[in-house]
Length: 283
Image (tube, rainbow, N blue to C red):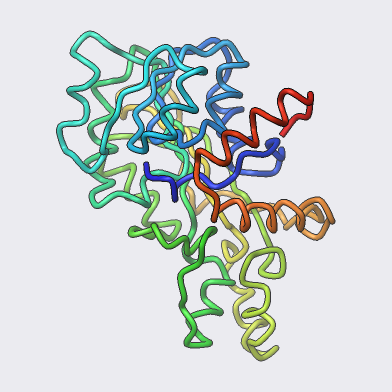
């Protein structure tokens, strides 16, 4: 993906989509990562003894992520022939697409093309933004649907899904969802807090009927339809209440950091990362 794709290069918070992706991937697996960006997830998978092949578009991101991968291919995932870069013999235990499909013209076809790349007992781990979050609905009700440098309405997002649409995306591609986790944020914990507060109290109260209204991102593990495992229906799953972490000083700092980092080039971010590593600072 381009330099707009991944915007966060600091230590993974356990209550984020990245942390949930890392947990679902597991340890010691042969992984294909689509669109790793600067390797925010890749470096953790590498640390978990995974052997990684990556497909990435941005040349600067390729330079950064190469140290964590066995192979890195320059690749535009909008090119329908992208699987040919891997050769017929390569099969993977896990295919990861973390916050990637929403940037593609045809994510349905991209997901289908993952099926023949999976080894026996292989699975995909995907994270997606949830466009029906109450904060985004508030933007629509305020007639103020404006793209942002990062977050749910990232300027590079061209595809959007609600919970039912995510289910159908996997069903239509020949997968069944066997594990799912939600990143939950109240509207006040998102980048749209100010817009949420502009909504009349009665309207905010009315939005509470949607039990998925605080789901910010969905992280999924899915297997081919013929594989073992009970298929989950996302609409039947319970949604945890938003945690307090979003109000913490650390979480606010991370959101601000993510905003400012989004304006830096990948080369600048890589230099900062290497400098912090030399100082022994985890990020």
